[in-house]
Image (cartoon, rainbow, N blue to C red; front, side, top):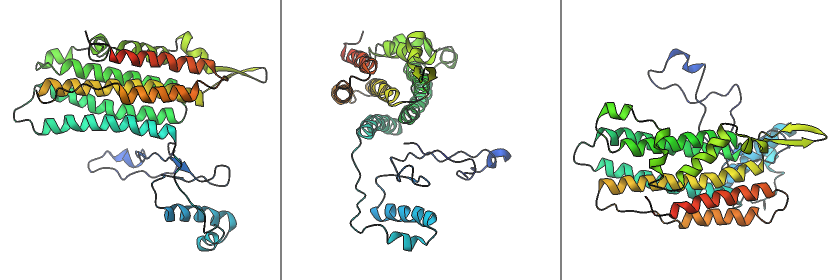
Length: 315
């Protein structure tokens, strides 16, 4: 889950040279917590499953102490000694970590290759790598949005991420600033499909959800007590978002592999479909048995078909 900073939260101190209004508009900490103290029982405190057990115990005692009106030391006595805070494996976080881990691994390979370059790279490579770095952050942000159950907002950022990758892939071959400036990100999606054949259909999927197409936005309506309700976030949205982000992660890795291969004869790397295909298969196996939402299951299978295009030989 994503930590949401309260209104009076003081974020990181403004960097040197920051504008005078930085103190009034601080950037909040970029922290994602995967655990939370018992919901519905006082103030919720987010923490990470990797925190030391003793720290988690003390956080629990601190919250209890305020509710009980006693010291934290006293409150801790009410926590049974045998209480354990072992991290329960969460499928969503395993999938998120797998995708982001692969993205980080590929991006770091590209950074390492650039650092070892002996000659000045083409201008397009320098600028294009900035786009890949931006896309790397965009995917993480997409997972943050997906984790709170937002589908349409996830799609909007993910669509932009695909454009970042398409543009970076296109300008990497150029060394003329005028030509680089005239490259339109949207127009390069077709060229991106030559790197990964699923790019075009995934871009269309994100576009329908970003541009509020009827066949996509009907999912946002429901009927509750005889009234039409708008669904802002849901678990159905989350699993659909995760399925789409699995495909996006595969495309990201393929783009980096293409860049590595174009810059060095020793980097003829081609992503195998294994990890991403396995993640999608797991998602299908978890969602398909549920008969409560056939539409969600069908949507995920549609995205699995799009992922399968990644294995199609490039044009």
